[in-house]
Image (cartoon, rainbow, N blue to C red; front, side):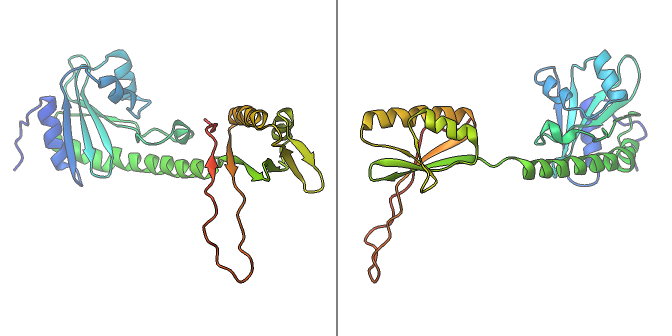
Length: 248
């Protein structure tokens, strides 16, 4: 039988509440303001709890965490009111854009009874949280699929010269021609001659820096060698050499 006068101190309340919720939960008590801003900034609420935090910053709180990563914020009601405010904390690993258009699973005010509080959370706040969190995770997956792939420009050595397939983008072509690459229309490539190796190296460095500013990696590559018919290659092709001028 439950104790009719449960311990109403915040830490004890949160510990008992964690044991009453479905699943495996842990309770962490934060006794002072050290690091509390990180916690309160994650409170996923635009209603009663958010308003209370804006008017009455908390100086201690508790955080409940379920084994699946679900987190709940627990704080005393402001002023002389009895009971607690409980709100979900937003998923920590989701980008801000994933929350766009998702309704916050606003928190609740409950009495200082962890057993009745567990019922309110189980049938009210947590279902709303799981709906909102599911939408955030779906949005995150969508954003990940839409993320642009890294662009790369390959310069291939050929008899001392560097050869680049003619780019589709005019701005990339302009960077190459600005630094000494010339069109070979017969092969649809651009070529950087190797007559002056010092000048060639300087051109490669300058080209890499400008392409990096455009978000494009530059790769220097040796051509693949093909064995003569009926023979076995003695050694594998030389590995690619990645330029230090990488996109940021």
